[in-house]
Length: 110
Ligand code: 5GP
Ligand code: ZN
Image (cartoon, rainbow, N blue to C red; front, side, top):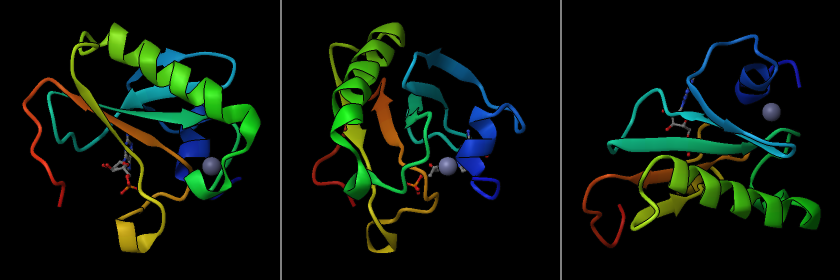
């Protein structure tokens, strides 16, 4: 999708600090980090949000999250968040899992 920010990052048209990639997913650092580790794990193919995630990508996305957590040194404790829809705070409409770690997390989230 030409007008999708994350599709453009995946295509290499917009720079990002990439930390991981595989056949299905890529991961790059959030531009406005909310924790010492704040990585966005996104499917290579355009999916609007978790509400449209196909079965074929569900497992691979979770495996990618596990791999990024290990690579970032936070496998002992991390949080995964995905926002679906403006009500939940979604601002980029290409599915992304926020992987947050490196500090103590509060609960409940805001
Ligand atoms: P959402 O609000 O949709 O759950 O999350 C979107 C995330 O994308 C935000 O945390 C925001 O900081 C991040 N973001 C927005 N624009 C860019 C960008 O151009 N590059 C990177 N790396 N992250 C971005
Ligand atoms: Zn996209």
